[in-house]
Image (cartoon, rainbow, N blue to C red):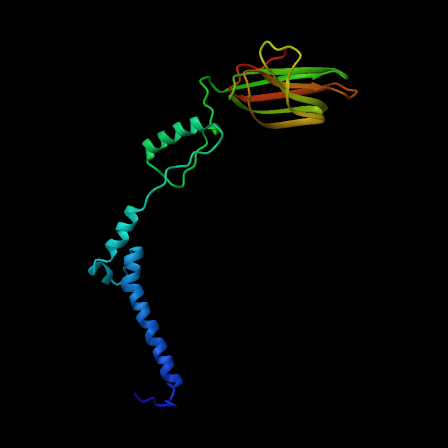
Length: 213
């Protein structure tokens, strides 16, 4: 076998033409075979004629759908919710679960309002009975700054309470509340000023009442 040395290299023009031809062939293969087979996209109709689009359809149908993951602290309630979701709507891989975010109540929604007048140096309490998990939206407003303790007390327990919010000087507040236990929940306001202060409170939710002890 003889080796011929110093063979001429292809010209720049030939290299450019070869590159364009290779790119054109790759583009044609992409449009006519790869896209129909992998993604079901067939702009030319060649893929369907060759039966390639059925590959994409089969791949999509055979892909496993993951069950909705169970998250949150109440796993038993979340597992029940997962079973209900699957029965009602099927499995959805983008779905997560947190049953603790929803608390149903058998009672009606109430709107209660109450106003108390605090003389200088005096305090007053306003409470409502809540079952554990029952919630409400509240707002209160005073004509001057007052000290406030938002708290709850368990039934038949004297001299003990659980505070949710404490401020030394506040004239209004609003928010949402979910009762952490059965009992009475509400506010104690104290007027530390030198003139009377009126405090008005409104509660909308699943409380049983709103009263002054």
